[in-house]
Image 1 (tube, rainbow, N blue to C red):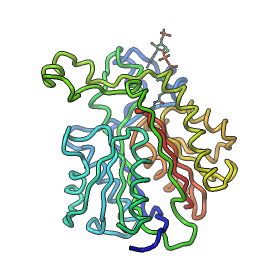
Image 2 (cartoon, helix red, strand yellow; image 1 turned 90 degrees about the horizontal axis):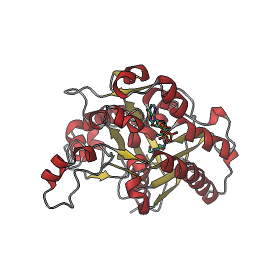
Image 3 (cartoon, rainbow, N blue to C red; image 1 turned 60 degrees about the vertical axis):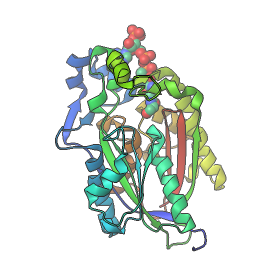
Length: 336
Ligand code: UT7
């Protein structure tokens, strides 16, 4: 086993379904309006999956292939898969093994499934980072992939939640850093279970006598429930807190951040965090306008686009931050 070392992002990629769903398309379904959605969330459109084409696992595979390609690696080089999603293909097994199969990985590498909703990718990145740091693995694939659109209440009753979420996937390859000071500097994970029911999909829960009958009797509980105002209230506190925690641990200031990649929860939350941290517009990346909130996929999807658009360059200080259901929240500070 080698001494502790840094991991770095050697490759990154994303995939979104081709079907664009505008706010205008939701108006007749949900008694909503483009103006309401844009004013409250900043979202203009999102992607919805195509049945028979997109799955949570194959969207992850599409993103992973791009990440592998950028890293100059083949699928069988992957030594660990970490898969973050709240919308797995099956109740069990988790989507990690499906991704392994989809990529044609035949080396029997472990596939770990992470259930931390909007914070899932940053949690997964932290897990992967620990494995690389200790020397147990050299090549770890971390993905966030979500299909929300098949599970949303698309009637007026569901409008408070359903206008927000979208489908997509993002992936990174972690490798040991060969450059001194480059890579993931630290990760910070938190949760507060007292708020578990504030953003929840309750069914199919296991703790009922007859689970299947219970689902048939309580179909509404298969849809997401969100106490939006309370989630908002906690998000605007936890985001700055966990970003500051990462900076403090590394002896840095907000002014040192070159690019903040926040979980794309709501543009208003991002703007609040930006203001609170004193960051200029060019130091905060947002693509929620085009994709909505893709929960575990949102951070790698945003990071991947920022890289693709040339907004992050070698040596930049990049901060990832997330908050969501659980409540869970997390950050990662990366010297790119
Ligand atoms: O990624 C996980 C973390 N999630 C979040 O961070 C989400 C945090 N929360 C939010 O972003 C906001 O709470 C929402 C965008 C979800 C909702 O905004 P809000 O300002 O908190 O709205 P509200 O739920 O308090 O509803 C205000 C009004 C209500 O009407 P009345 O009672 O004032 O007449 C709602 O019925 O807006 C109505 N409303 C809508 N109207 C049109 C709720 N949803 C819609 C809609 N279209 N889609």
